[in-house]
Length: 352
Image 1 (cartoon, rainbow, N blue to C red):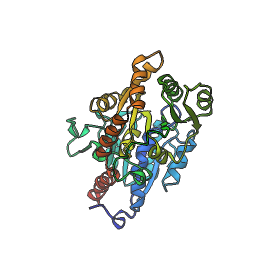
Image 2: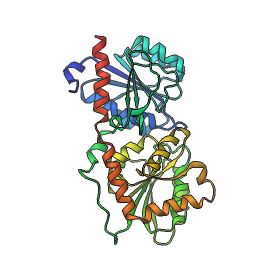
Image 3: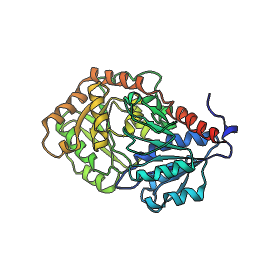
Image 4: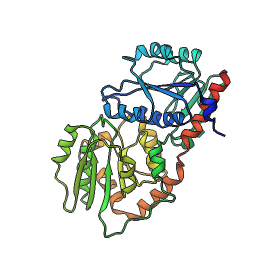
């Protein structure tokens, strides 16, 4: 049973997240799902993150009733938390030094989001929402609990609202193939133009919508000549991404935190591995036939015949896309935020 709003009255959860044009907003987006679940239960939620340089993300946070406190720099996180005096703390960071976690845990119940090995970061509760993480056997501090696997994948409510009741059927073969390409709120590695070029090289007729995180990327995409039968529409960061995914036949994206949202929506996805911490999930999703691994970032730099062939297979094989949709849809049910909120608020109860 979920912890009710009456039990949650007076609680404050601080969420410490990496954010910025260079590090992206993936940490913010997966904490956003948990944050809005907590707000719905009557918890005050404050996100401790540097969102001044990513105003689109800041707006997403505020409109869900989540407050923002800027730490200034990593070294000021403890100072901000001391001023807030939360009832518990959530940390989703690659930048916060491991030594800080022990100090935080001494003062507050602590939930830490990880991608695999916690690497010395101590906590009361660990969340690893990655594929296969339920089988992880990392050494944890005494009394700590591990929440692993896609049952705990964090889905924003706008995603869950768009989740179909069954996997999407194939589009009529006479309608244009609708493809959506997006690579996060900042696209820090400039992947979107490279993928648009790859689609052009694949040579299959599509109606492609590319989300450009910056005006510079939009300009670069606009200068790419599509193949015959292809049209390319360039849009900026959008609040309607879930609807665009639901309306698309194929989605092209990075193999990061948004992967599980795409699974929840039952999308047929081609992933690009844009960072080292995505490699394990990227390889496994491809091996388990849950998605098509298009290429690693380095492979997009040159003339990769393999990447073109993989893109062509995804765009040209309707039965492959149907299998991918069914497999992904079955993996993520959209209830991850509820399960994690229950576990986090149980920590708060135990401290009373």
